[in-house]
Amino acid sequence: MERKRLGRSDLMVSTACLGTMTFGEQNTELDAHAQLDYAVERGINFIDTAEMYPVMGRAETQGSTERFIGTWLQKRGRRDDLVIASKIAGPNANMAWIRGASHDLDAANVRAAVETSLQRLQTDYIDLYQVHWPSRNVPIFGSNSFNPKRERDSVPIEETLGALGELVKAGKIRHIGVSNESPWGVCEYVKQSETQGLPRIATIQNLYNLTARAFETTLLDEVCFREDVSLLAYSPLAFGQLTAKYIDDPKAHGRLTIFPPNWSPRYVRPEVLAATREYAALARANGSSPAQMALAWCYSRWFVGSTIIGATNLAQLKENIDAAEIVLPREVTDAIDAIHARITNPGQ
Image (tube, rainbow, N blue to C red; front, side, top):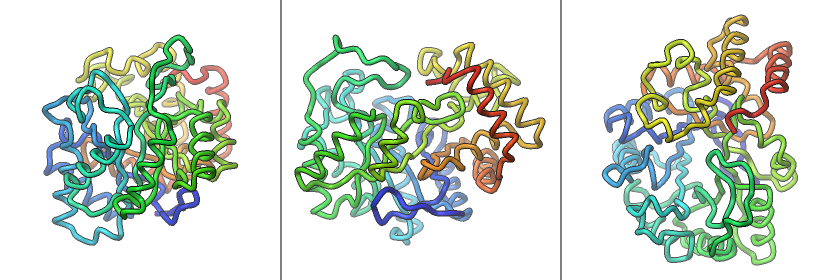
């Protein structure tokens, strides 16, 4: 599998990254180890997790994903040929079980989060440590409009970055990244790193799929190009919607049916369903499955450093990895852009 460099770091990662947020909720530890074994066998060297996983988030399961990866790492060995990424949760009053109700991105919280993740992962270092979402007021997770009336006290980026820098010096993390960030946020992280002599972000992990292409229209693509920040594309199948399984069978088993309807309502919007039908028809007319067309398109984008794929069984994982070998004809990518022009970013 092709490998790409992340930002200005020395991390060379596979085109596909194994996402793990189902481990501990939809997948058992045995399932998780089987997926990890298969992914590595197929050439994936990049594994992404987070302290808050699995989803949906619950006190009873929080941290299970990192623990499952940790037991696998101990069983497998050869830690140094893998790139392990994790994330610190930003503030969220509804997740009081993560470092307490006042958890945030201040120096003490950053240190505590890293130490706990290292223990669960049973490793001495994390290759890429990311800020899962910002401390400040910023529209994320389906909210697209900035509202200054929602301003609140927040931890300055400089403080978060300084704490991460200390952990880099200590050898506990190697490189850093952000997630669910805006163009302003990326620029501020870069500015602070340059003016304060702090570590530079290598990556941004943001939503990107056929129904959510705002990365291209908010100037994030230009910012990341000029500042050498690689996109780690998450939710490339729109929580399974772009596989067309829910179009084919509205009661199909998956997170859009087993989790509460209000958990991720953006992927069941009428416009998302309409776009999915058109993308699925295009894929099938050109000899591929809807999932493989959606992933092949994402894998091929010039600004994507790696695409984070998730699965609940090995058959799904195989299909997702196989898509990395598909090169979409120009007429197919043109047709994708035509659908996007008519139904623009319904899942953003």
